[in-house]
Length: 214
Image 1: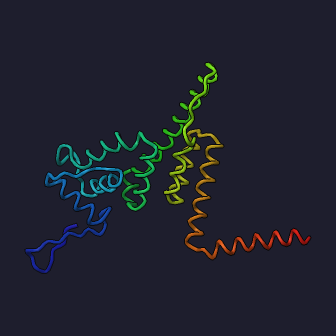
Image 2: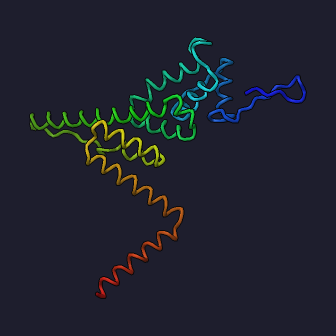
Image 3: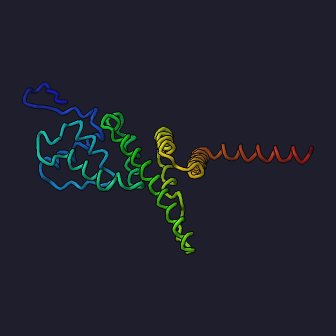
């Protein structure tokens, strides 16, 4: 990572492979100098990967950057489905380090576990309401977290879907998630290429006309 310049008194840092680039290094440097570095959903994946890359572990300093990011992940990210999905999206730009640290795998597993826990809790609430003949309040959307999966790339989406299926998420919920992802993907495709949408509508009109004529 260190490179000597032609002037022997000058040392340059090669940050080419640093996860998150110069911005990550700046945050890590501030942390080293004792400046306040706020860890949040936007930067926690970046800082966790940076701490791994720069070996900012407990071996070299107490409560180092790795410890701080792990604490945030365990307390704020992994227990919450929405937070997990948000951080997982940021992991996409940090490959392969986000995979090497098992950050991606841990988040996907957490999403699947929490989704199935939520499913079980919802089922128990329905049973209790039926027993007492009382209506149970329903969330605005039963698969609200599933809608957030549209922010993920296809590869990460497939991995999450495989994980929730393995953990036992109901088929109707999985179908809703799939349809929602497909719908949003098509919308994005049409926005990028309006001519494609016009072409599809023209094809539909032609098919209808042919059917009517026959």
